[in-house]
Length: 162
Length: 131
Image (cartoon, rainbow over all chains, first blue to last red; front, side, top):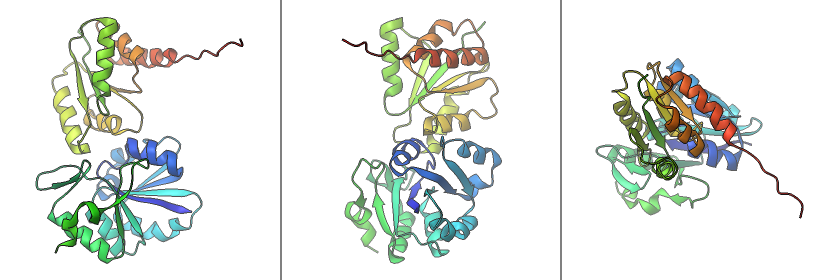
């Protein structure tokens, strides 16, 4: 069972993950792969307490790569969250097998342009998306399960241009 | 006893709607601020909360909608190190009304304890009777 969702979301754990995806996928574990959070005891504890009834593991990128294959065959569903596309690319280049990546929240920042209400990308992000596509990862834009998943290429044709 | 300030941090327009409903029951409300997380990254929301509570020299209450949501998590992060600011989550209308009636009577910590108790008590069940 295990990996039920790999998601890029700059909020990491939050309501859409805990309530909407949590209700749909019933994860036993949520893996937050994030160097900054993993290095901060306080942040790690905060995230660990943020998903009622679910075990939350906050680990650095290196450990995320290391555990990925074992977790893929573990009992029960698991979610994986990263806060940015840089980490997602590093995970896949490090050997994690991720068939599809959910883009669930990359909010506005200077230099980013709008893809939809909850996904904004800059040129570095688009280059990372192209890299993920080259590596065979499907990129799907969807905030919650009740909305339709759409391929990133369909709503952001600029990704296809190099 | 100085008045305990409050900031509602909630999804979408729930905070404004709750405040509007409270106004209908309580009357005109002053000195309660509202912040929506809509369209904001966690960093942006944290920054805005920090700005709002910066002037709370005697503490206050951050009232959020649900445990595990970004409003709650970001509120906890933004108020870290402010011992007299309490984050209370799961806010409903009866709890907000109780805050309004008692914000001049208690300090932030005691008021937060009271609101947690009142919020729990406010959820009641009534089973329909057989015809």
